[in-house]
Length: 106
Image (cartoon, rainbow, N blue to C red; front, side, top):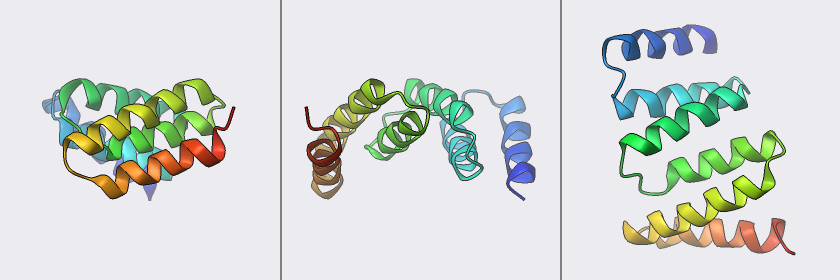
């Protein structure tokens, strides 16, 4: 099922490669399918196109964690905190801070 949804999103992108919403949807489907490298690539493209409110940074961080890229995941969480605060999402920013404090202690 996930593959057919992935294919559907890819089809939509073929006609409109700069559609940030479709890129976000494709990244989410890659995450569900545990295709983490593809998810990272799509989230990075999405973040180049959109003014994200924080959620995509959290998704990116989780995908990077699955790939063992903790340093990059930390950076994504930090960027997510900045974005969430800028868009008045203090709960999201707090969740990311808590993750950094509990899972990324030095």
